[in-house]
Picture 1 (tube, rainbow, N blue to C red):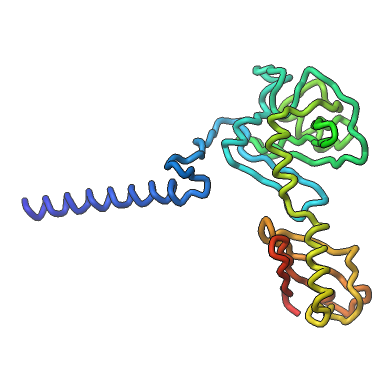
Picture 2: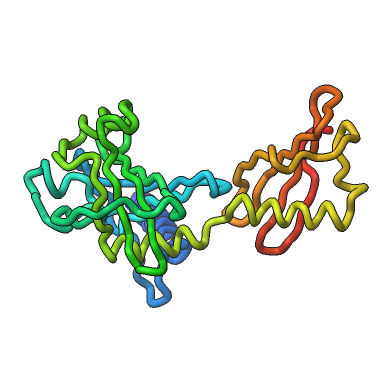
Length: 260
């Protein structure tokens, strides 16, 4: 009996230790854990049609803005508004009761994709913001804009107002604009790279030896503040050519990358 009691107590202590470790890891070590000891993560919703990720894209960005934080995604549900059982006038990210003229061409258009449980393709809209008027605009792609995109949206929900610009909700502007303004842009990353090249031209000489063509630079994101940039050269002498480097927009640090 003493040996049986020993093993029973030992196994119970091991089970408790494992539980305590996982609880600690998922709370104190959670990057979204609050200082007062409560996590601001919400439980994931797995019912079909629930928004679980939002992506914002722009040719100006080095990478994409993505968030799967339920505190954000739970607020912007695709299956609400016209064409759904929950015909709420102010839902998803727009006010369905109003129509707006298209924003000026000088305002950037962002592609916003909402990924839903149970659907392969996302629901996609365009978003623009006029800081001078503090006005956000949302566009639902119409039949003639991008046929494939229009059809994939229709497979999720038919609104009846496709092809229209609508006012964006303030709650969406308050979330989207800080993320957009804090995103690393190609222009900023290239400026950092050019500054590094100007300081040490010998270190950042092209592989083939000819001048670099900055207008044709391509980008990828290594982190929210670090870009990987490939700058081709004007007269390549084979492959590889040009210059591959990283540029950190926070520190201004640069370095060569890749096989040379």
